[in-house]
Image (cartoon, rainbow, N blue to C red):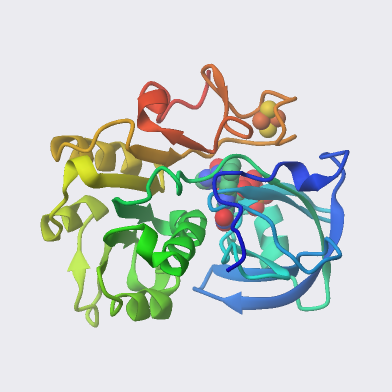
Length: 289
Ligand SMILES: Cc1cc2nc3c(=O)[nH]c(=O)nc-3n(C[C@H](O)[C@H](O)[C@H](O)COP(=O)(O)OP(=O)(O)OC[C@H]3O[C@@H](n4cnc5c(N)ncnc54)[C@H](O)[C@@H]3O)c2cc1C
Ligand code: FES
């Protein structure tokens, strides 16, 4: 089995100038929901290999429009392609999701650190995601499934606004049949045909029995959601050093030069985006520092 890049987060695309985008061909664009698409780009480093760690992001540059940070959402051990799941919310994201196969976008990165996949070995992993927050967590899930013997239970709690906003529905449904794996989903508004849970993601905790001393939690979603999730985990005894959050901030350089992504003493781009709660407690939900 090929060694994964886990925890040895590759920095700045192994080039001398991390500010220089390289051109990458769009291989495929798949519709996930009405506003969210998954783009596969040729990894383009010449050797067909893809080198990133779960939790890292790239700066994607749409020529003539702009550059933006997007998490890598694919399988870290799938060679040859870099995969991103993008929700169209404005000019740059819309320009990305309307790309077609054969087009070209600029890529810098991968940047940032990774989910603590090495530290989490031998433990239960609870993945808690809200909305597009499932995208940066999917590589961690791929990693766990590829190295199943290294981890105990995998529990995924995923909340979306409505059933039509849910990402990777077929994949989540398939994973739910795997041994030692629990996939729980919820929506804020169900509609007539939804038979599943309705309510915020924390309502799913009642279906889960956590072993606090043997659990590592990985969380990504809107910060208000992460606040409530943290509270729930704490009430169940999961410690701040075992609770990890991915923090998004406006980013420009992605390499610690410009200060746009500052979170108190940290830069989200180079010290994060993944932080243990023990370091982030004072900064969740604070945008203007
Ligand atoms: C480390 C990191 C990883 C990210 N990963 C992903 C990803 O995998 N997929 C994805 O779709 N997006 C991701 N984002 C968010 C993405 O970068 C923004 O949505 C994008 O920059 C918006 O650009 P725009 O020009 O399309 O929209 P803009 O015109 O800049 O903004 C449109 C609207 O979206 C809001 N908005 C902008 N940025 C964000 C944000 N970060 N979070 C919430 N609302 C925002 C703005 O306030 C505004 O209301 C990530 C951001 C960071 C920092
Ligand atoms: S984006 Fe420039 S310092 Fe982080």
